[in-house]
Length: 413
Image 1 (cartoon, rainbow, N blue to C red):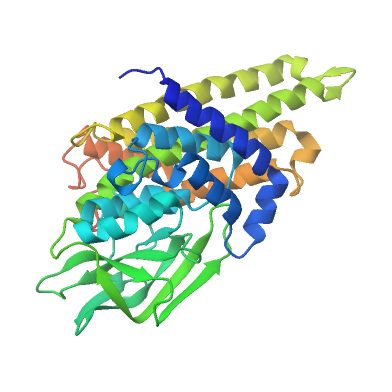
Image 2 (cartoon, rainbow, N blue to C red; image 1 turned 90 degrees about the vertical axis):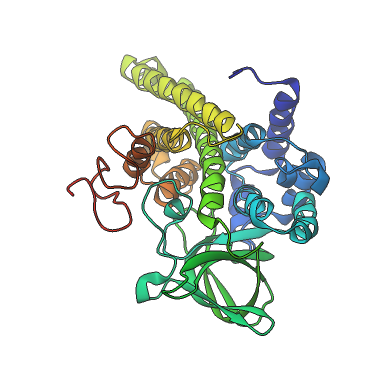
């Protein structure tokens, strides 16, 4: 692994940071999330036209830049630093690679160039209530069918293709996406399997409701499908679990890099604040206790950044990569973001505890990401199981209690 960035990668970072500093300050972020889409559509188009951000990791034959997870993670570190709300994660990180992996040649040729240009946004809808489980990050088996309860999506063959019925409760940018990729269960008991379907935003029977989320910069929606006509993505059968796990490795590296950007911004702002805030006639940053706290955060941040960069490099390797690298990096970066944002609130004193202060935007992002993609202890338990540290992955042997293996059996078994 070469830890040095190329000139092109540094240019991506520099250009993106300059644009976001001008267009995505705290007030602009609050205004954007209050809109119907949950993000600044004009800024999204500028990111697409000027930087080609939606197609950064897509092949050149589909209008992309032909870069890899490392460049995408580097860009997302900057969007995390600015806390810029955008469909980047849902569209470019979750949906586009799934279309590239499972889609037919015609589907790829139709959809990927539109995604690369920023003209089409997409979202991944997985039932069962846990995106981390569906992406293979925290172990266990996704409850695609809902186990007889509300929450699953069922697919039935119809005269014109397929019909979907069910719901998904936590769909990132699901309320505003032009296209939904819906993972649905079909085949009944005899040929039980999971397939992915394409659902257009204007499909009859589709209802999308934006939900109140802890982190407003990461909008979520409840999606209901009532006999909705859908198009099968790719062919039947398909290795949906394998494709989702591959997407999960890249997504973990990207979210880890975003968390590093969140922590880096908060640490920079806190250091600047303690240099000017005075107590007892001197800056509070001159107190040894404050210096020690900031030094500990700095060391933790640098370690997390190294882990995120390694995970991004590992995700771009051909083959399966190193077992558990992405999940471990994500766990470390989420933990770091939570620690740094918490200390940011504390070290800003009384002003840091007010809802109006920007520190709370970052604190909410750190907390919400751990709920969406964690928790941290399950990420680590799944990584340990995948690496075979305590026993075969998925058997329940050595898995942390509570992480499970999809059949309710944990370490106690």
